[in-house]
Length: 195
Image (cartoon, rainbow, N blue to C red; front, top):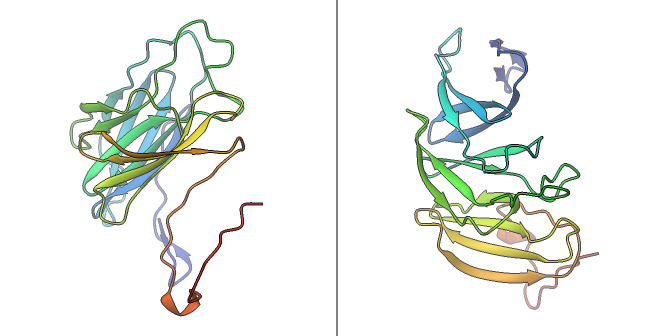
């Protein structure tokens, strides 16, 4: 744990070996998620703790377990924790896998590790972000492993319903969220450069 204003290390937490670790804020709490193969563990990190709490177990449903490895990501949004498999990278499991690899995003209860829902199971996200109010999720859906069929989607964060979809030209796409100060915005017509 770092104090950026003082530029110093406050605490160092020891994590079990053999896990890939990612993290996300859920409200005022920070969570570390560690995964390997089909199991994962979730730790809540408290600013006043000197050790991590006992983790909760998360079993990532996977009907294509024979197709390893799998990259996962977490996202915190409006009090919810979302877990999804990352597609579109060099390790995309859909390449050479005889079993259909499901997509979507899982809504997780961070207190228990229980899966609350499987949202947008027909989408295969390379990236997933939350809108500023947490009510919507935005994602890059990679429909095939060569990025020849790609879409930008907007989802209802509670139900997973696709609210909007836009096809993108064949390319590798990224998505992020930013607040742009009004003083740097031009008045009049604005064009975005894509190359």
